[in-house]
Image 1 (cartoon, protein in one colour):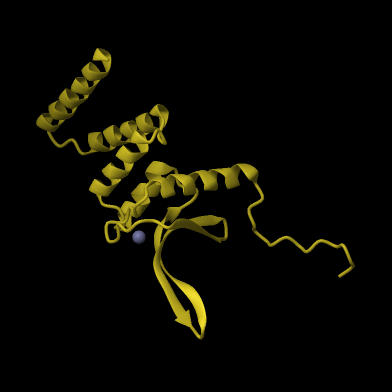
Image 2: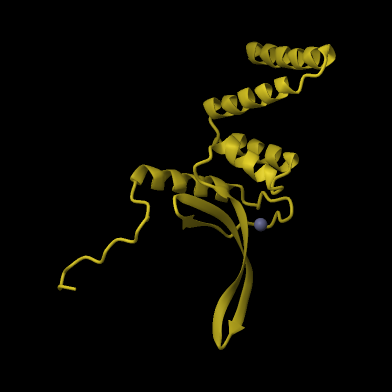
Amino acid sequence: MAKGEKLPRKKNKIQDEKIQNEIEEIKRKLLSLKFCPRPDCGEEISYIETRQVGDQIYFYAVHNHGYTKDNGKTRPLLKRCYLGAYKYDYVERFNNLGLSGYVNPTRFEEYLKSLIDTHELDIKEALRIVDMLVRKLSTKIKNEDNKIMIITELEDLIDMVKGK
Ligand SMILES: [Zn+2]
């Protein structure tokens, strides 16, 4: 290789600045949870790690469990928990996690609450989730009672917003 020639860029490495920013944003949001959202874990998050496989970016919560001596070398004892993949939006990502059994509804609720409390989730995003939930619930209406219950709850919510 001639002097000054640049090394070939690693194939598939994401160059798109917008995507990189979005990934950083997701990492920041995940880190702001402070504790692992996986119900089988819940440990404090040391940092968020990403791995790229093809076009997918996978997110992991890393938990530092201290250090160990390995052939005289000190290395950290790390536990990694898979949190989800990029390309999904919030709802889809957590649905996906839910399907994998990683996030139970209570954790999901806690997660949403923390996002709202820390202003990480804006009104538009929150409304999109409400919209999705109502649509999903509507498909589960089995009888008139279910229907009335949902409508009553929604009317109460609307009244509450109007009263503000
Ligand atoms: Zn964990």
